[in-house]
Image (cartoon, rainbow, N blue to C red):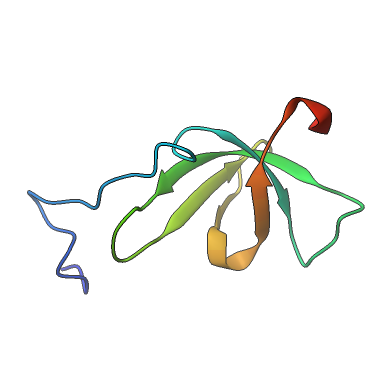
Amino acid sequence: MSRYKYIGKGKYPSQNSDLHHKTVVVMLEYDSREPLRGEVLRADDAAPHEVVIKLDDGRIVLGSECTFKRAVEADG
């Protein structure tokens, strides 16, 4: 059972199209010397406002566990 009234069998928060399924650059523990790349699997526009990122190495992190930004061409 979900603890959020916004998520259920027939309801799910709308997704932020600026981030959803986009490539991002992720820093864990604020370490900018070793940025990681990943794809946003979930970016809620409404409550509970979760962001879920799948890193290129297969790990899954929450947006609250890292610092991230949308990747641009200059990021390589």
